[in-house]
Amino acid sequence: MPTVSSEELAAAAGVNSAKLRKDFSYLGSYGTRGVGYDVEYLVYQISRELGLTQDWPVVIVGIGNLGAALANYGGFASRGFRVAALIDADPAMAGKPVAGIPVQHTDDLERIIQDNGVSIGVIATPAGAAQPVCDRLVAAGVTSILNFAPTVLNVPEGVDVRKVDLSIELQILAFHEQRKAGEEAAADGALPPAGAAARKAAQADQGPDGAAPAVMPA
Image 1 (tube, rainbow, N blue to C red):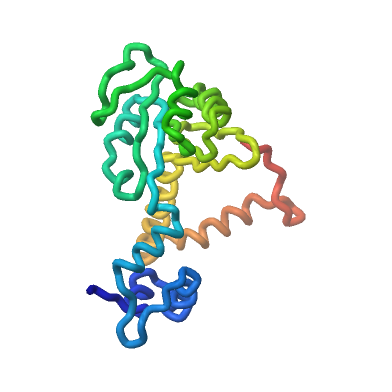
Image 2 (image 1 turned 90 degrees about the vertical axis):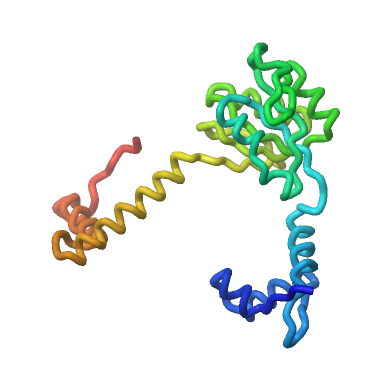
């Protein structure tokens, strides 16, 4: 029976072992002194708290390149998420199998949601279609939405939305690359550190009384 100590888990997670043991106690898992935690049981307890021990049917709306890639992603099933249906507005897509699942037309969206007991929807449509699709999903009973469309969705209270914006993720990586380049240049004596450069630029932008001038939002 494989076991793992709180010290090993804490080191892997980058947290304090005492804090980790306290957090695990809320799951009802206290481990065994000198032995640690039963790995299989600990995984079950965490999965149970995350709602991953049951089957979650999911629909994906918008079966373009991104939607098709999501349909083919193998990680959903291992985490308890079953792709129950693929939906697209293009009549030419209707009936075509993607990842072994026939695509259905958006005209049947409400019926599909009801028949499969779906509460989680994935939107992978163009931006202009995302809000109408969202409205229909919510009206049909979907209460959680994962949004890949490049737009902000408006939903009523009680509906959870998670937005995945790949361009923002790339911007974050670009920021880190820029910072690393500045630090390397500063270490070589070629440029001041990025933080110093930013402070100097901010000082140059200040008005005569030291206050930054008003800037209209983009």
